[in-house]
Image 1 (cartoon, rainbow, N blue to C red):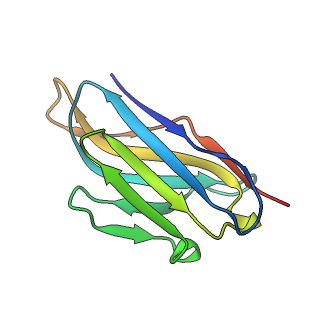
Image 2 (image 1 turned 30 degrees about the vertical axis):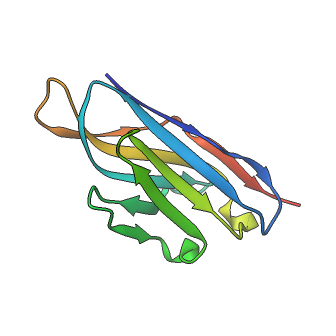
Image 3 (image 1 turned 45 degrees about the vertical axis):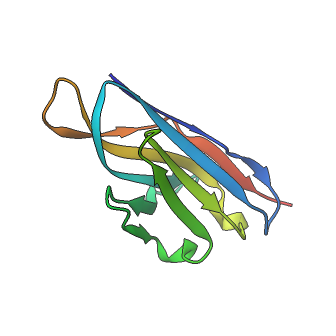
Length: 121
């Protein structure tokens, strides 16, 4: 059983910063790609940032230069540093990981429960 738990969301003023954390736990053998998605009310879920096991990253255009994704493999964790936040960044943020868990030899995508980020004055 694998579980992903996000933390770090909250209310912040425009121009402010937040750091989201996501920790995976359970019978983990290895983790491939990890990422952050978001979903605003009435909109589809979109990929915000992704990081490979080798550290390669990619971002949606709207957050390039403002958000930074990183990971700590020793802690089975992925982070999202969000700077210069804008009201349009308001959404529920979800982490996911492509994880191989005991006793399987296959990778599956697991999701966290989400954390709310609200950018408002």
